[in-house]
Image (cartoon, rainbow, N blue to C red; front, side, top):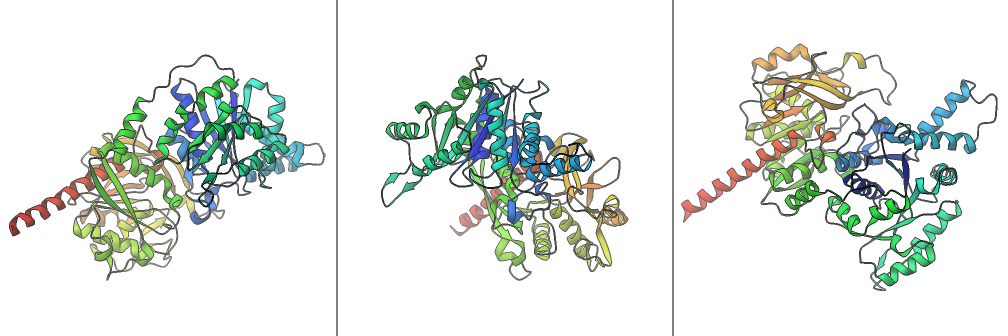
Length: 548
């Protein structure tokens, strides 16, 4: 049987429970243990698939097609393993399951209650991943903060598991805040004390306190926290702000978080942590040899988490190329023919981001046209690829009014059309083309040089596709459809061979990029941006020499 670690949070949200959980899992994995992480979210939505990106950030899609919380992206990026639908559970999914059972008569006419029926279903899901001898340790992150009404059934389930399982098979890590008051010039422990008190009142007692702080915790302060929160002093872990989330595992290693957990769980067989690849990545990340500036053309740029996987993929690709990738957000809603030169001329590459809906679409098309005409490295993802198709149709093929039926149902040239299997679907949640699908790549293409393979699997999240009725026109005009789904003929990759770097993909390569396995398309795109930057510098240097 696996052992279980629960990660809870208090005082405030956005403290970084997902990063702490992923870092602890990374350290345990580095010691040779088989580890996975799951996230329990307290919102009533069945999954985040129908949530606005402004509401909940990025919707992360797993290999098996589950629309999940963005923290699962951190889990995969840190552990270099795939998660599944079983790794993300919401209140909505719990209640849906229990209600379906009630309708089927599974409770034999009994009154269905939060305790025991809802909590029993939560416990079942919490223990599920650990029941097939696949993992030694299952970490479970509980979303929200202690004291939230929505979180109470999850906390109650943890309390019951602490009572039901042997002491050495379950433990709780509580993440909390030690704020620094500048006026008083001191750290304050009272918010942490109240948070632990509130957790203890539910019957759950933390074994370890991970304290987020801007200033170092003195031994005296740790002793005070330990005394008033009833934990051992060694179990008070300092988690200072880091320059990058990828430093956090090393910070936790220095604080011996993993060793304290192993001791509590009575695990005696483990190795010295092997973090050589991780440290090599960090060295490249922290000491780049040059810099490139990438314009991210999007419509949800006010919330960084809306493009979380893309931003992290740039970090991975930048380290591979030994460059610092500076991403500048450009709101597509405010790009026009008149200002596009001013907004985009200083970039070394352009990424047109995924999204839904009409808002900001024309700005994305204008940005694609600028990149195509100025030889600026271009990378389009999902909607970004579709905008490249529309731009090419309008400005190269002369298809006036070419558009996607998503934005313009009555367009005279529906170069982007709804997929056939999507036309009969009325429900919104979980009904898009989701998860990993195969793609066959033309051997005489940039995509093949990037991947080095003719058959790949990439993750999807879309309803609309390249309209193959226009395929011959595009190919004859010079656009290469270099990747297609072998079963449906769906165009997966488009590129322009006569351009320094111009590629668009219908899938989401950012969802499979990890520290140890960066997405090939991002690595190649940043390499092209690096060459573009070097060519600009060369031209400037030549011009300067001529003046001298």
